[in-house]
Image (cartoon, rainbow over all chains, first blue to last red; front, side):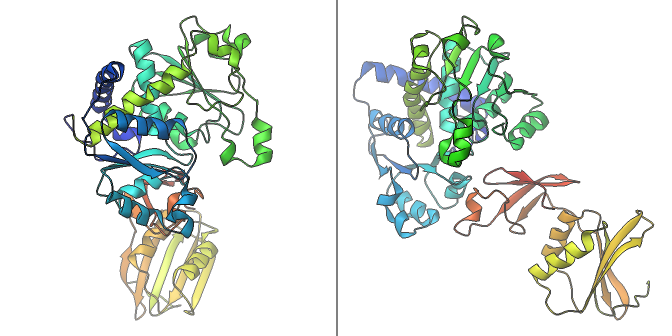
Length: 308
Length: 143
């Protein structure tokens, strides 16, 4: 990479060249994965995974990525088992763990926490989700999945649906796709619309004008990519969650209206927004998407550690 | 120099939009003024705009940080420093491109509202003032 990447906090931290370099490295990582042979690209390196919030795919795919690269992992997946439960600050935890590892992956409930972590670390920080703000590595694997199937981003009609207010994956994705020339359609229940700062950034900085809707079926017929998300129960009160639960459900009846070559993505976990019947449709690519988290995270780790 | 009849030494915050005088006084009380004699003028006629508010504080010199803070709330203000009944300094505060620590981020979910991390903002618009948090990227008008 021409410009070195110190940490990865926000999808906007990457230039277009850096982004496509990562995709290219991820392709070569897929070859390593397919061969299933030992790899020592990250031999002697340690990845710390500090997960203050629950995670299945993100944490395990980071750990899998580092292990496949020949490195080692340490960390916690439940802050209650660490000194955080004794009141240790994020800054102190980061300072400490930076001494034990070569790169830190952080998931934290507060927005902006990963950016703060960079102030206290001499090793690279990877944002694995900071509250309802951003989830940039999910964005990388979303983009990588789209590129593998659609071969380009420019001119694609991408419909992003669900809880766009708290669904942090949608924030990173919208900005990235806007930069890459896709046409954006935001579909959400009233009250869970895309945050204004994201819409402003798209309109004012990127001159992209997303089309907003409250109806899942309104734009599904022209979408090349349908990106579904769940309602973020953990960021809503229970009454509010019950109000929104089940407001958007993709079943075979809805899918009938989609293009024959559209792809259906979801960052997972899903709750009830995609019925299991859809899993059998060849357009449903969310499990392939989850798999793609490994090669793209291998590419990111190797790039940040400057071992490739 | 124009003579000031009300205070002989202190600060005059002029050209506040109508309604901002009391707000400005309350904010200054929270910030740092204590027992200094203060007069708040409201809805005064103005040559620049139809009406204005004004705050005069005896024996008090506004610091740069507070000037910046007030200019973000009311970009039109001018600040006069009075010594011995004369205006010795007239300040039209400039809104900076970035601000640190003056106001908290209004996003309650922002990391800067926990554990005492200092707030920092980009000023993305100067009139009206819009601040964007450097950490959580939440945008808001500090008024």
